[in-house]
Length: 123
Image (tube, rainbow, N blue to C red; front, side, top):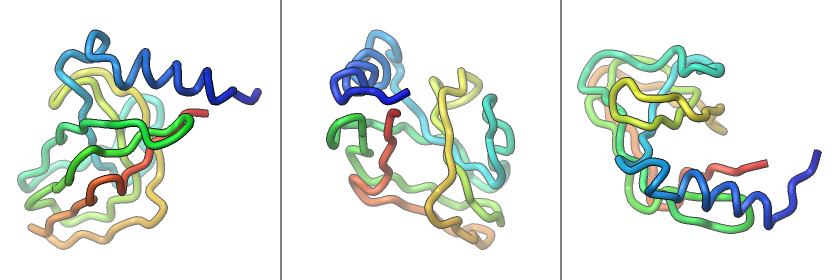
């Protein structure tokens, strides 16, 4: 099934960009393997914690990070997937997917995305 641009934008507006739905905002997680439908395989260790992810629309059916995202002091891992959550800790897993290029991270290394580098598409 194909979604029209109108429907994809409506889904984004009424979910990801609606502060009434997510009053605390959205949070980005990192995963070393597929998070599946529940957010499995999230990184642990170091100073890793989910980060706030302010999003803005970037085109039909797509949003991007509005500001720099920097995970600091990560555990040694290969970050291959991202996740989207309703809370910094616990919360509901909303979505996830593979990174275009996995990142091999050394113990204590930082990982960053510049503004507009992380793109999330609907449909």
